[in-house]
View 1 (cartoon, rainbow, N blue to C red):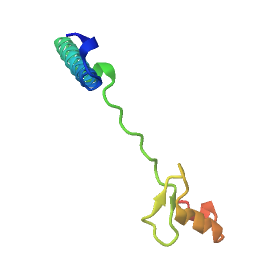
View 2: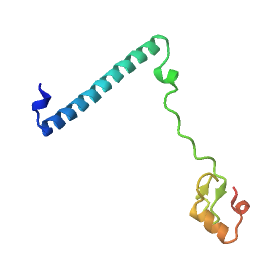
View 3: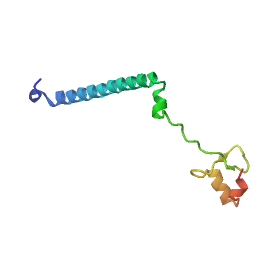
View 4: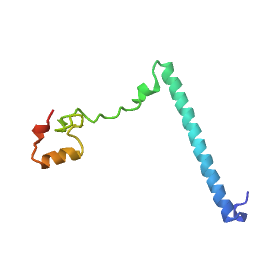
Length: 101
């Protein structure tokens, strides 16, 4: 293959094909490595997730600390942005302790 004789379009296509082939190669190698590691962990009586910590559980949004004055099903944990109903209640003269659960 003589690159000097190829057109720009052919070179760009070749570049795209090479990038695709490289990604595919890397993906195959990662799967092979993962399979070997899983087999080794299994031989030793563990799962790979146990050894690597696996997926972390999503942090909870917290236990509700405040409830809407008129609709107790609307709650807020006191973390993150204040909900509109909480801001409105404060603006109307309520205090945080008035809405505390």
